[in-house]
Image (tube, rainbow, N blue to C red; front, side, top):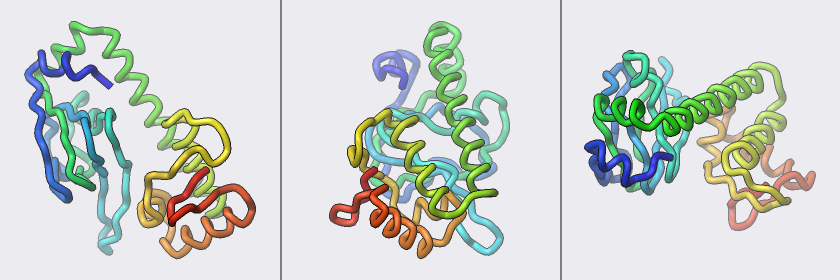
Amino acid sequence: MIPQEILLKYNATLKTFEKDVSLFSENDSARYYYQIVSGAVKMNNYNEDGKEFIQGIFYKEQSFGEPPLFIDIKYPASAVTLVTSQILLVPKQYFFQLLKEHPEIHLNITQSLAKRLYYKAIIASEISSQEPAHRVLRFIDYLKTDVSKVTGKFTFKVAYTRQQIADILGLRVETVIRVIKNLEKQGELKIVKRKVYR
């Protein structure tokens, strides 16, 4: 995450968006760098049948939507707030100026994008070749180990709903519910007040 005080020096604006507000739509031009101060944002698409596919969910201290900003293409997905969210927006030209003047931040952004590409490759592989239980567990382990860097059994609370996990992994929500119950019986997951822990 880029420190807030640095973003503000480069014409960042802190805005509050209510739940279910579209920040940008598929095929819009990229004009801002977005960084979440509080709340959550999902990036998604819908297929011809109206089924949602979630590209990713982003939380406090994460940024999203950078690739189109760097390569000057239209957004391949939409971004929508999941809850009331505070987000810092930096106009494209000032964001590029920031990166030129702060090479260490440029490197951090590059590493963050590389991690996302790695995750996308893992998920694509899992969706195409593995059983649902393996997919779900692999996804949760990625969130726990690679994203949140949490260790210890049942110390990581999964922030995604069953529906969101289904939409990300290309599964039916009924399948995800059944898989999570079976994984709990096997001692791989723990469910406390409908929340999943790994």
